[in-house]
Amino acid sequence: MTALGSLALAPLTRDQAVEVCTWRYPAPYDCYDMTDADPDELADPASGFHALTADGRLVGFRSFGPDGRVPGWAYDDTALDTGGGLHPDLVGQGLGREAIRAGLTYGRSRFAPRAYRMTVAGFNERALRVVRSLGFERVGRFRAPTGDRYEVLVRPER
Image 1 (cartoon, one colour):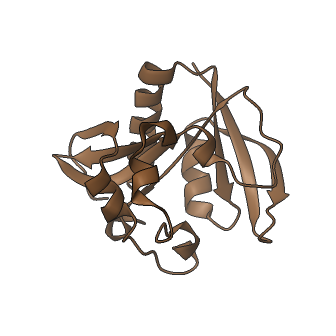
Image 2: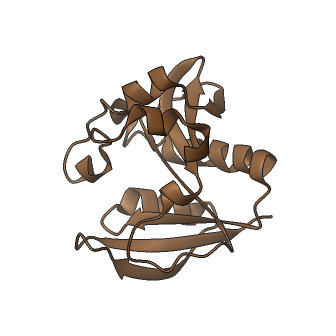
Image 3: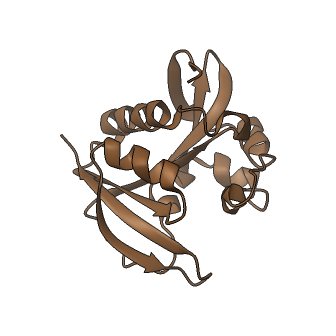
């Protein structure tokens, strides 16, 4: 595992949003590419996107709110939706747990949710394993309008 250094979260800037929109993941993870996203929307504080940095360098992002929702599930307000991603060069190096944990800690201080909810692509065993190890439990599965399968996992806030 590669160490990231001290992780920090802050609202995503436009320059960081532009960078995130250039990230390309290898198949089958290319479903996470954000090349069609509008950097201005990502940088809008209302979007809930936050930069994940290590030693001042953008290494990923975390999102809080409706962006973490995938069409096809009956979402409600009983949990705060959260999602995110790492820079493509950092994927698969065992850093996801640390990145998600940093996001949960930040979210706790900023939003004080009763629970967190994550929606994860069903094929993404790496992410599912990490999310479960952080105390999330599956509450359902569904097929999105695109035909892709997803799992919805929830963790009550401690």
